[in-house]
Image 1 (cartoon, rainbow, N blue to C red):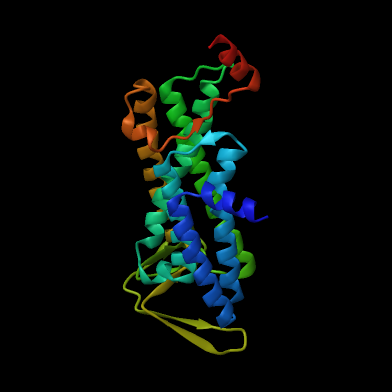
Image 2 (image 1 turned 135 degrees about the vertical axis):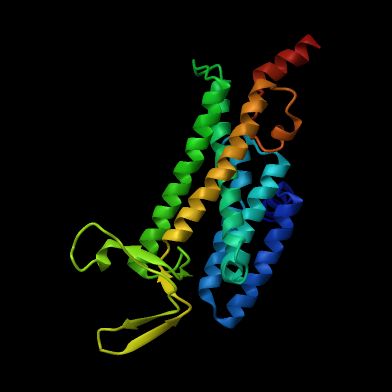
Length: 271
């Protein structure tokens, strides 16, 4: 048992090991406070930290150390700093940064999947560089859209606030038109909003009108698009100059070359 634990620790990168220790310390602290939701997030983070190891051992795909570090820091920034540390509310651009990185990472994964198939002798396909880059872009945007669906359903059915609300001072809606016509009514310069509850009590919202997530959703998809475009361009030029893209190689997973025992024995005999 001890041997397996030591081997597991050795298989982790330095970044993985350091972040895992930090998460473990945070988890202990939150457990002592009775914050079991944060303990769950810490356990989930530690589980997600094993994704690079799973990809390497089970899928036989090598992740460049730079890409692995970005993935680990992304998970840590989203779960530990963002959720537990409340960076999402304390730092306005935190969510935007993470969604941009997510667009970049998902494009890298989509690109790697197609590029590996493109160069595998088992599959008789030969996609052009522009098509591979386009598929990578579409893969990234699809993941981004699915995530926004998840945020919406969580907010709608469980009353969370994953789609971070924000205040707006101007609104435009056809629902405000008393004639029922499809002509919007515009209200500008809103300073506060009064909400009347079912029991007749009221709640005053200072600062304007509360937008319930649509601006956040569109902003997330926009920056996801930016990240996806950036990597798709990098991937395109990587394929064109396959052995010259030193920068691109730092972010593109590669399929391991499997060496069978028979090949090893033949090489030994020939030697």
